[in-house]
Length: 556
Image 1: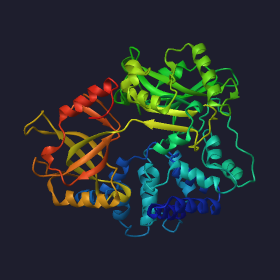
Image 2: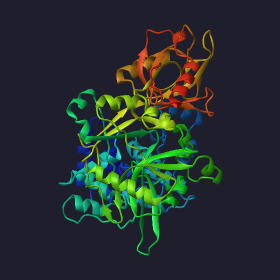
Image 3: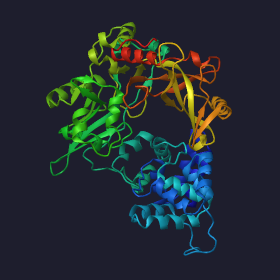
């Protein structure tokens, strides 16, 4: 456990991607099985311990420290694992097993996977008693599943690939269907074992991604060699099904990162009676019309779905591509051929919950730009409000995992932009735990006059490190109220701070006091020059919603 803790500690303080990659690769190369396999699972986010919850950790520390002191410390540090690791008291004397070495990572994982709920508090307390601060921090990070060390699952898999001649996409191709401690995977990566083969009839396949298109790209691209289709405002999914050896179908719905989300969408999973893999967009359709992303969110991340929700929020897949059909891997084929196979397959499937995303007809980039600006008149019809741009794909492109250059591009709508007033700030997590970095902002009610300030969103990125320091300084100097970890800052027409906020979408929402919900808001500029009284107003946002619903251009 100590060696894994040292790895996490170094990763947390290392900012460069290549340096993190070297640290991980060196660890995997020098650490034996099964220890390195469980470290890979932890950094890739593949470990889940059902009974190890933050509430258990809070209960343990509450038994050993002053709760008021802990609350103040947690507010300052901003991270539960770090706060408990620092405050955990050193045992007064030798306890049972005091002369035993610290547990290995493999021992910790195996015990946590098998221990009963009633035994867990005592087991965790004994481990914490026997570890130093870094070891305690790493243990708590591990069991809560919140490492926050700047390592993505992709980076962890890239480190495995770097052990030999493999590419990260090679690891992605076999990843789903394997389980920790991944001994066969490491043997293959190091060149002394065969490629692991999973017998899953409905596996996830690494997705192909697009590059944002830039103005200069159009000069190098021939419109006649490209196709275009709408980019829908849902979530990218893979709908996969296949037969077991006994003939029964297995069907799954995967997110773009390979998470199995079938339990949230049993209506779709049950409809996948096919031997195929579809790449598409998950949407909610009501009476044939695509609903906003805000509506789709009602179905996301649910452990179970009620019959009423299945009726009120009917799920739908709008298909982009066909990756596999009746035992044949279609990914090496050119897009135009996969597209033709997709259209024929979906037509033969005759499943009302699945349709094909229409292509956009164009002969020049100017024609495509006009369609992008007015999708309602270019084939999207009443669904124009759910279009967030278009995808441009080479007609001869194979389906290649990752983000290859020159094959697929995304041309999203320009973001909405408003001026809003900073109202509240909260401490961040991880590296930002010492800064106020989560900002709630609002706009004024009424068309004119004083009005009231109503919150409309929250943003925690878009600013530079230097700007974060300036924002944190403003929050500390202009706090007028405190609510636990949240500070209210001055926000009056003549006092406060205006933030220029960019966001990708906006919809009506009964869950929010303002009646609106933004998608992907971010701070695009700090308006030190602008008085809060000149910030935008709620009717402006309501007009944006109305225009967005009709698919009109985004200029305010």
